[in-house]
Length: 183
Image (cartoon, rainbow, N blue to C red):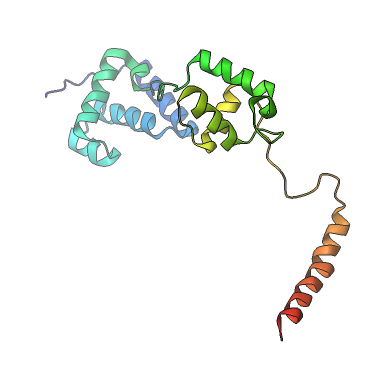
């Protein structure tokens, strides 16, 4: 596959250099490599030298050069990464919101609060879609719910008394347990 070199004009070269600086600041390695590869190719470096210097495959390099030739700087940018299609439809999400708003007791659960595993069970029962409880939190954020986790420290705790308990009371309790354990 023969690639003809396109001699860059001054404006194109400065545009590519700006892209290199921006990609470096944004830590976008792929865009940085593509822009550097196009500049190196225009400066006369061989395909083999560019592949080795920027750790690019031959197919990747030729694709990059072709995209730059056709689209310019925008051809070197990252495209959208849409990800997997959602497993719950918008209608299902609205129904889930209604279930969550009504509360776990209204749904028939014993607890007064929703937990991620409980919500995962509801999703499986209602929509026949399995969600791991860790991913339920992401889904809740998407739906506008806040995920609350218990803290290890009391909200109205006195830090001075806590330090005192850790330094004196807790070690005394541990020593007392050791004495009781010995016959």
